[in-house]
Length: 215
Image (cartoon, rainbow, N blue to C red):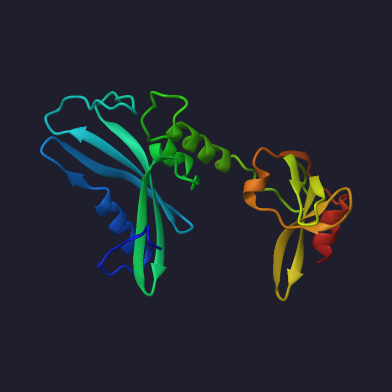
């Protein structure tokens, strides 16, 4: 918790958080001003696109970003947030700092200025966001191949799985049936990065889909 900045403002709701993120991204000096263009919350993390302009109208010169046609630059920022004993805290990380959280929506990424260095942390962060957005939302019965084998807790691996579910009480939770063993495994969405659909089970011929419909 030591890395969080806490605010004395009353922040109790989504609207309160968005207003605070907007405030944190809005500031002005004698020569420049910064203002948010878009703010999105994914989980407990906020992603923002903030535009920088010079007050006297000259183009903004920056070592990281290519100046846009209107003379401004727009960068991405990540705000980690957390409530602790009723207090709302945050930590802000500019995209060139290489934040781990990489789930910014593509609509926000498209607002950002081009980067001068294709090997920068910011470039890698944007690509991770695109990779996350590209993960398909597989349906019940879809047979998929993971980009690389996943090692399970017992030391075995799996790479080809079929989307299914199991029940816990009244809830139904997604899991994946391992093709080689028939066992069930839970997989994170991140582990589906780069996966491909081998076959879709939208027809009644699929045994997994039949199991799903029967359930």
